[in-house]
Image 1 (cartoon, rainbow, N blue to C red):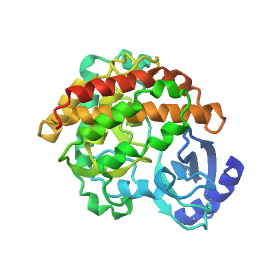
Image 2: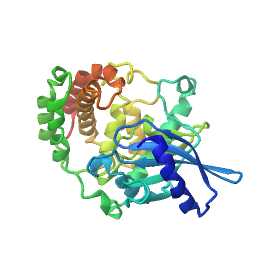
Image 3: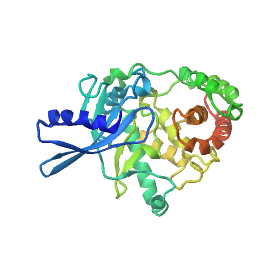
Image 4: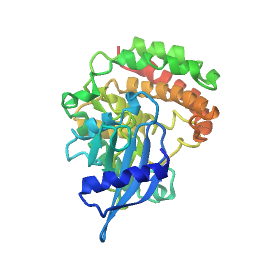
Length: 336
């Protein structure tokens, strides 16, 4: 949706919800992202200005999976206050306002964790570890939420399905030669499926760039819930650990950052969860397997001009190293 059109639609929407016919909409801008469209806007009333984000699905797509923005609402609305998050102010699935489903959350003052920024480099090690403890404490509390309180999210995803559903993305991926280990890693994953694992709500993309902190390094919100689902909650810590595993990456976007690394994050999670995680290497391997394939698929979309993001041209350098790391983890895994 063009900004001018959105602004026209936001004005009656805001006046209706504020019950104020003098309210004005200002400072409308688009946020980055591909699975949905996020915009910032402000509402001015008398001497007060409120700042908001609105999330819309992409136009002309089926409202399912990541395009179904109301899945995010379903998850956000069952989170306890002990999980920092942006509370949904307004949401709906009617066409009256924007011609598609939507939800609105407040803007926060702060920033995501940019792991290679000068700000992070200049922080004391103790502060970086405290930030990790805040994040993982929140993650453990997410995983304790009763997933049946959010029926809109559907039934749990099986581990076998989670391994096999990436086949169609492999077939479309760019630089497919870098995915030569996919069949071997896939079979290892299937051969070593964990027998028992905790099931709950998982975030789906839990990493530093989806954690929003204040200038005082206090966790304000876990953001970007577009990949939320129900299934093995260790998906999240496996994913988080993979993005903090120096042995998995060779590209400059991900390698060698100063935030706590995989082993340290896992130890913090075990402390927060109150139990050891003997099957965690399997979930780390699954995460590396997934992201290698996701990189190849998104690289194809980038090169075809469908979802332009030059970062994939750098991340592609780690497609093979991620699969090699997955293979090593599976060969040392204690599962089966």
